[in-house]
Amino acid sequence: MGHIKMNLKTERQRRSTNRAMSPRLYRIGSLFSLSLLLQLAMPTSAAVHPVFTYQNASIQQGQLLTSSTLVWETYDSKDPKQLEFAVEGGKYITEDEHYPIYVCRVTIDGVPTSGHTEKIKQRHQCVAAHYKRGKYESFDVLVNKGHLGKVAWKPWRKFNAGVPVGAIRIADDSYIARHRAPNHQQHAEQQQQNPEHEHEQHWGADYNLGHLDKVGMGKIKVVENEREKYYTEGEVLVETEPFRYELRDIKLDRLRTDLRENLTELTTTKLENLGETYSTVETVISYHFNYMQYWGSHEGVARGLPTKVFEKDVATPAEINWGLKHSEKRYETKSVHTKLWPGTAINVTLRGNYVTLEAPYTAKLFAFYYGSDESVSRKITSEVRKSYLKDVKLEFSPVYWIENGTIVPTTTTTSTTSTTTHATTTSTNEPTPINEPPLVHVEHVGDKHSGPDTLEKTLQDSPASNEVNSNDVPDNLANPHKDAALAGFGGAGGGGATAISSTVMMLFPLLFVAFVLNL
Image 1 (cartoon, helix red, strand yellow):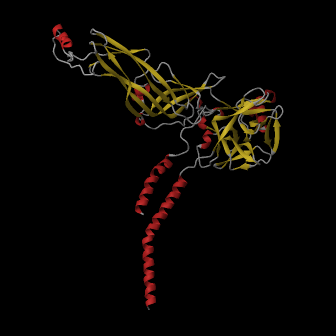
Image 2: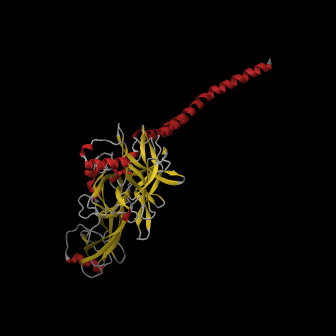
């Protein structure tokens, strides 16, 4: 009987413990589920790999440089904006739709192989330029970040003597190339001979993508009808790097501008009268300060390239290197003079406000290329940081005796008789009162570099919104009929995060704390 009572008591304790633990376990489970949902909701960024382009180092030997505007990016079917920045390889024509095909690559037997994309419902596959002619769901796509790299298909023949400068490498000694598909080539020739065939359609890709092989005089290799084929002419994908930039139409985000001032002592000196008469004494004061400007960086814009910055109401543009901090010591000189009595002196100090300005901004970035009179412009968003000096002011001490450093008293007496003035200075060691403090004059000598910065002056003209957009197509490339391979010169702005995922990221810490407190 006692054994049964003990078992019943143990069972009641176990049930009571389970009831007490259930809410706690429920909260932990809910927290785990929420974390899992948030991880699934947040977009994953695609893997990015560098792109190498061919550059002529000498006649006998070339070298590869890393592109500043192009990358290989792992295809993500969940990112609807990814292919907006992909480099076009041609068009795919079916009875139901026409759509662009993009340059892609896959690795076959350890060798990177070029190809082009094809749509399968809402997804894309990479059709490799390989005799196996496989279609791959996992591949890299060539991305022109923000449609800002100047990329073009350049005609090539075997008599061109080698690889074009700027050709994009796909593997060792091979570069991305293409050749017109035979059926589209025949159709184009028929149109020239007989315009009545203009409205006839030929299905499939209008170009076969492959690679340029450097062997011998060179040849372009593609796959046609499941067979590898070689051509002595075609087109090679070439990137042209800009040689300089210009930054114009700069507008600060006034709401997010941070302006900090620090009162700084620049230099100090002494004005003293070592003569025997009341006379003018003067000196020249020189000082320097650090002036710094940094206009940020932007994806797809070549770091270190010479850049001219055109600010409002500035006659001469600043010259910087894009993406690098530009610092310089600036020197100023001031002439200071006053009238002092014999044996007296004053200390003179120059102070100024050293300002640090930080602000997001929007602007137009223009890229210039060798061999072309036209520039390519792009609206970008970045952050500017400047440090400069303004409000330089003079401070001076009371007049004091050089001999003992005591302050010369002042008096409000208006009498200036010679008896009162000279009796005190010669009969005793007591200081001579002066009627009023001396007037100290300051004049600037040479070039002036201090003062409110032009960005500070233009804050009133800046937009009061913190909404900025850098995903627009370059202004002079907005024509939808243009070949996307010719788009712009340097970088997309925002990445792949959506407004919803950003909100989720902001709410996650709050939700986490709330659950923990309720445990």
